[in-house]
Length: 185
Length: 185
DNA sequence: ATTACTGTACTGATCGTTCGGTATAATGTC
DNA sequence: GACATTATACCGAACGATCAGTACAGTAAT
Image (cartoon, rainbow over all chains, first blue to last red; front, top):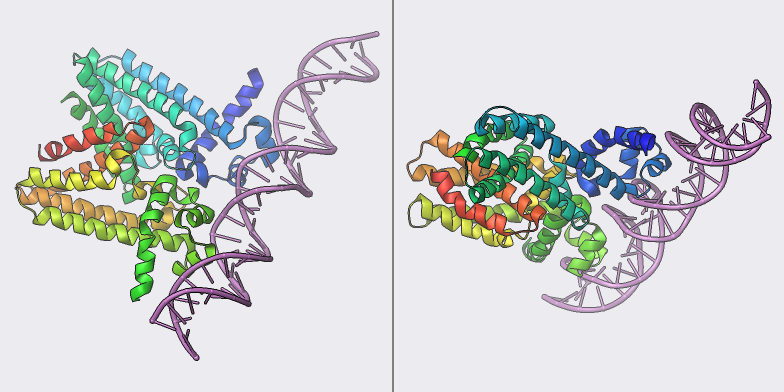
């Protein structure tokens, strides 16, 4: 468990970059081999399940990151507005301020959608739960907070897509700036 | 030009369905052949440029639809709110009320992004222009209307993604219901 | 008879995956 | 300490399948 897991983890950033940019279908084993510097056979040593195994590993790592980020946002100081702002900063950094798309979205628009949809759904729901928690902690009604958290994800995902389509990361930055106010409205 | 164009157009709905659901990389010629009932030779007869030619044709058709929808929304009766609502209804129908993703988004998340990004950008900008026109016609400041139209696309695209990820089209319907009020706020 | 269209058969390339094997280093046995 | 064993990390070559695309002969329609 110990070292093997470490070795796998070291390839996660590269894999994440590939899958989020080109999607499941757009990433070939040759591309992965080139990007990681590992031969195809070596890839199957670390990820016996092939491409699906790699995606699963990246998703798990992403899930952990999400959990940590959410916890940090909840545990931090300040009112809901500043806490949401802090969470937004983390998110903006993760998405390179709108230059890199979301892997969850990339997975949902491709032929492998059905294979990963349940896991992606669980992750998004956890994310929404964290945002809703910040809002309720700030005194908002629980049901309304739930609705607002849904709006939040809609805006984040939409802004990433539109920023990419317009080739203008500022779209994402503007949306992230508006977001805290929009949620606490 | 006359008949050939007609024949091409008759396959557009099927092609649109394929590309929006599976993306550029996820659609193979075999799938297209199966879905259209056409052999490969026939496909290359109608679309000499192959898959790219098909995408281009669908995009052109989509562009025309967009223009017509926008014109209808602008020419119709009522104030900005009702006009936006009418446009929203058309859009909701086109996306099967949140069950089918947007082809523009699918194209932007895949390996073929760079090939179609300029065209997608032009289409989104025209779309935004139409929405902004409705808003300014309703008395809104031009610059603000421009910002709001950007928000509109962000919400539409994001709602489609999140609805798909959560496997819950109601997310999209809720977003579309909120949209007109949100734009005229 | 010309044009539009289609089915069959084929190409070379690439796909995801597996096989057989080689280093290196740790681990156990005596 | 010497030696066999095992585990880990890696690679080249090849697998069958499928990929996008083409050549060509044939059919259907005008």
